Image (cartoon, protein in one colour):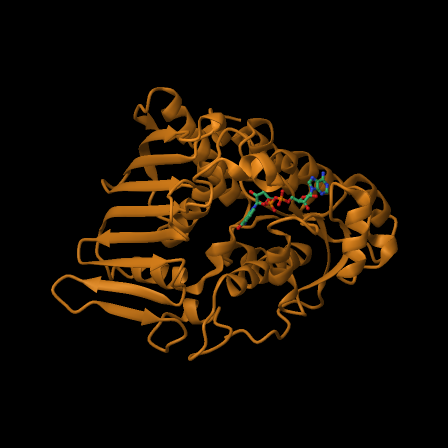
Length: 399
Ligand code: NAD
């Protein structure tokens, strides 16, 4: 159980690019990083594309005025001159900016925590991965839902064979908040999401399904996709070529099959985020809207609901417990768990502790790479008229 005690020698000096006053995701980063007072300390930021608003915001949340910078270039240059300068930076800006900012951060000698989808192409990720290795730095990716410890329970149960051989994987991340195009015109965060120059080659496949795809890999690390077929649509025509709805069928190497539905036009749906894994003996099902519960359905037996924090859960699951039985945990705790693991990874990297790095389970740059590959494969299939395509994951080896 976690109670905020230190896991690393001292808090890391942390800054943010983006995530300012009007940013959707910035507060989730701060909740995640600052929950454990012993992991990160927010010392600097280039919080906003508007420098004045960024400075005002930074001061408002307690950052020293002189360390609220007008842009990331100035921040990296000025912080490098300080003895107590930044050690790690989080990037919470629109997709199209991630690659340049990440590269600049690594060149400035910083560890990086970056939003998903990491970059536009897997070649870019491979390049940045090599740069991070050269500089001896960590790049983490904020798949923020993946810190829910019941996903580790699912991972443990799959590994122990408690559901048998995996046969069917059902993934869904849908909502209805963009069922009309109202937000496309007036909401800054929605405007860029449907602009390929800023969003990249996909809308909901990148924005939503990269989370669910990573979570499925976390639960079943041994399951590799062999082929997939993607059918994507833009029900709001002005969003084309970017999809606001997509279906993906998967064939896994072990003979299992899978299906993923992602959508922002699932009208009336407030949170359709779920993972169901069907094995030869039993099934597991987790819904983001019920994050404290895991359904365990054994064929021929009464359905069980496993509840977070109980002693019957796997040790790996309860190690990430924060509030204890009787109380609900949710997305905030999930982000805190992820950020704590980023801190542990960065600290281990600084100390040259390879054993910790080899055993720590967290969304690292390989998870970011797989997410970008997932999008590339889906888009390639869709653009070939929804053809079955081999899941390409060998680009790195080719370089
Ligand atoms: P947003 O448009 O709401 O906010 C973007 C923020 O970045 C704003 O504060 C803006 O002023 C700032 N910004 C833009 N360019 C900048 C620059 N060059 N320098 C400094 N600041 C800059 O976007 P959002 O919805 O918060 O999404 C940001 C990123 O987070 C995207 O990559 C998105 O995919 C991702 N996201 C992830 C999750 C998650 O659960 N992990 C949730 C939402 C968004």
